[in-house]
Length: 556
Image 1: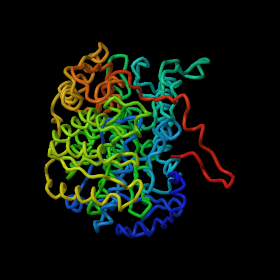
Image 2 (image 1 turned 90 degrees about the vertical axis):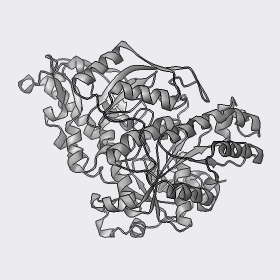
Image 3 (image 1 turned 120 degrees about the vertical axis):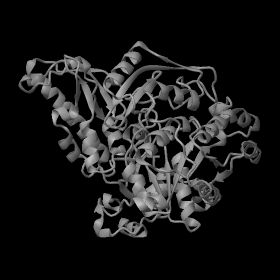
Image 4 (image 1 turned 90 degrees about the horizontal axis):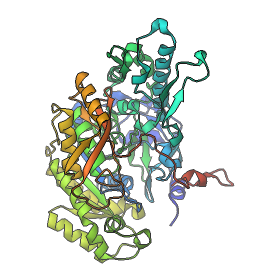
């Protein structure tokens, strides 16, 4: 079969104004970025229409090296819904250059279930990531400028500054750095570091904001550090929020593109789910719901991370009422959780699939905690045997959850019809099933313990001395009623990446808790997870370039 980039390049693409017309958008209202990309103004958000539409979340089992195809399934599902006569839009996150040039690759789907123009979406797109980076780093510059110019000093203690610079690239060497060296003209020497843009609080704020006024207010609420007399300092104390908001004036508008079969696709915001909230923007989701009967969206990684944050952070904040949940699984991934090695992925082995089912079982349990009967979508590979798929179907029957085989990667919209029909049945029966895992009025420690014991299946939580001190600071600042955005490895239900399947009797270790008061949550960091990833030994960047005709190669 052809590569993803070949399929994308050879598929006819409609002018974006024609895709906009499908949604009832006046082409004159679009901010065009060439012929095939555009931004939608916020004026198209209609709260009445939002309540009449169906919202479907796509999540997955615990990620594996085999890949689960969650974005591919989301795109295929939206295409399948349109194929059977529903007005559907897929709403996704923007890819980060870190994974594109690292190990994971792009995030535009695959096979015949892709969003296009694929190269643009996976690279600079409409410049949203760059705008987030610039807004973040403007605040960094203002902080260090204040330290340098004592005439306007806020009496800020440099040792307490928690704000970091960001860049949209995996670069482990920038995690911990010293700045201000070289003499008094170059600033005040202090320790700091970089996070990846997708994990920044500015990205989180962009995705949590409901309009430009809310965006500016949230930017002003960013916590920076303490004065020497222990008083909190926020971005608004530096008058930073106005300029930061101006840098994001275009980035706040969601981006419109299309799938291979011209289904509308809205792509906006790019927070990771292992170190950030993992869902596209509230504005993008509400725009999709205002313009469609069905919106298919996905949350990063598995149900314990992206889905939990989608429900407890995004839906509670935005007042969204999801109607159905899809859990993506593959035969290969279940074999991996059953103990298989990479060379066993393509060899039929029903017993290895059976051994990996406890992982799927836990994710089904997780979604039931939020009030949903999830649809299990088996993202099919050519090497999957009928016996292996039957093992999964028998399990789903025992759990009383529907299952559908998704073949949209190979067959496009026609391969997702069965999944679309199953999702419609669940959405019809669930107008108001959703219930959050915790109440926002609970204190932070109770929220953390609830997530860890319920979503991960841990027996206990341990806090380092620093984490305990962070909890004290959060309470003293009056921020203990904020939501919780866990930072944890995506590779295990636990905080230890090597623990496959469904680990039990483990303890989750919280080493520190960061404050994202502008975004509206705190970030407990579990285990060794880093907010600035590193590149693998052989990064994808080594295989990306141009061919003789000037076409991009190596993206996948």
